[in-house]
Image (cartoon, rainbow, N blue to C red; front, side, top):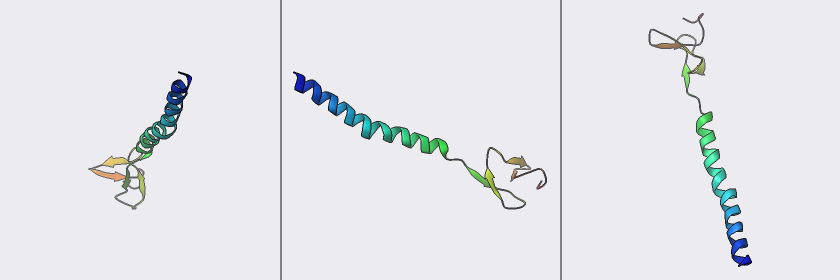
Length: 65
């Protein structure tokens, strides 16, 4: 009975080490990916979250608009 419990415990630990980390690392990489856009005036690439949209085009700052 003790051998059976130890075997299950070892299998559970192996599962946590190899399979749980893969799921968390793949979800992290998807969250870390940001879309970049090019400024219509100067050509600088910036994050889409920081871009300013004017007339359907992306700009890096108000100076470039």
